[in-house]
Amino acid sequence: MLEREWVSIRDPEDQHRRYTFDVSFLLSSYVCIYGGGCEGVHPGVQDPAIGCCVHGAYLNDDDDPSALRDLLAQRLDAATMQFHAAALAEGALTEDEDGEVLTRVVDGGCIFANRTGFTGGIGCALHHLAVADGQHHATYKPTVCWQVPLHRTIEELTSNDGGTLEVHTIAAYERGHWGDGGADFGWWCLDDDVAFVGRDPVYRTMEVELRSMVGDPVYEELADHLDGRRRQRSRVRFLPLV
Image (cartoon, rainbow, N blue to C red; front, side, top):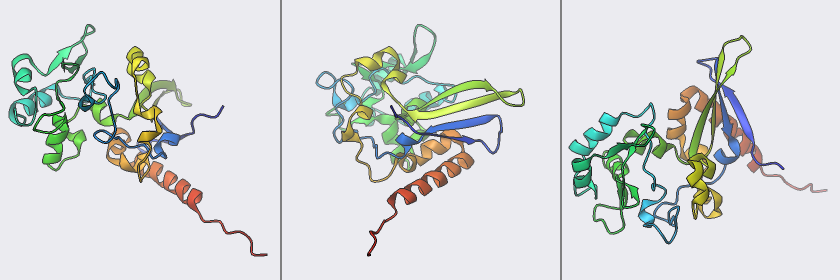
């Protein structure tokens, strides 16, 4: 059964790196509906304002914990971050049993997530700060936060010349990518056509994120290919007159 269509692009700046894209998703009309119909991953149980931020955000090698701490201490305050006092007192970051760093969970959600009724606005305080500063939200948020609904996996294979070929797969962030907890979600937006209502395809609405993930040359080649696909698909066909 056909499920996904993929396209691979070799990085012109590194012949030992290849990107494989889930073009079925990138060509789709998916759009985040936070604040416009999203009830969170546990509808009826959680505050909808938490959205999918129920487990805290794990930081990866591209994230700088000190930068988050600086934003907390110097840029955010009680008027813009609901749990600002708690974050200053006990820290906004913590570690799991494996020593992985993540944002702390307070009352069922990420400590940076403002809840329903907060006068500073619901949702991620870091996101609001970026918008107020005229920045893209990826500037301040942990990597996993701005990448969702995109997911990256990296695999090392053997190249034809005997070297290491690094294969990056960019696909939709499905339940399984959350680990065991994903199967327990009462709702996940990528499973519901209510979230596939965007005017433009994902590869255009998430251009900033994709450029950050794969670099400008690879993104340009991907976008040119998908633009061509869309032109071909939308071409008007007239019936014969005779």
